[in-house]
Amino acid sequence: MVPLAEEEGAPYAGASLVDVSAGAYPFSPYLMLYVNHEPGKPLDPFIKEYARMVLSREGQAIIAAQKDSPGGYLPLTAPEVARELVQVGP
View (cartoon, rainbow, N blue to C red):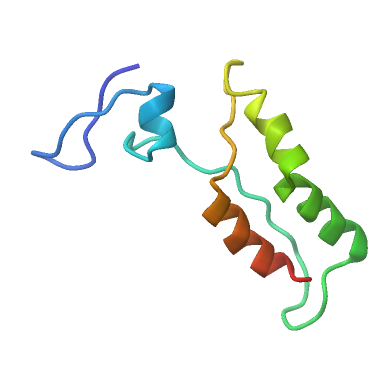
């Protein structure tokens, strides 16, 4: 991987686990889960429970276990999980 900078003159960051985890590497996108549902209506119970499972400690541990595999993923930080759980709802 080639070290990259966000913009000209900014410090370069490599694609190391540390730089990607810190959000310093410009090409480290999030994996998104999109749900097609009508705004203002509750999520389908299966979809809601699936999202809550992915955001749980156990779900994030499964994701963390994949970090060293090719194309691996990193778990969300605690603040990121909390923000996403608000969107999923109680």
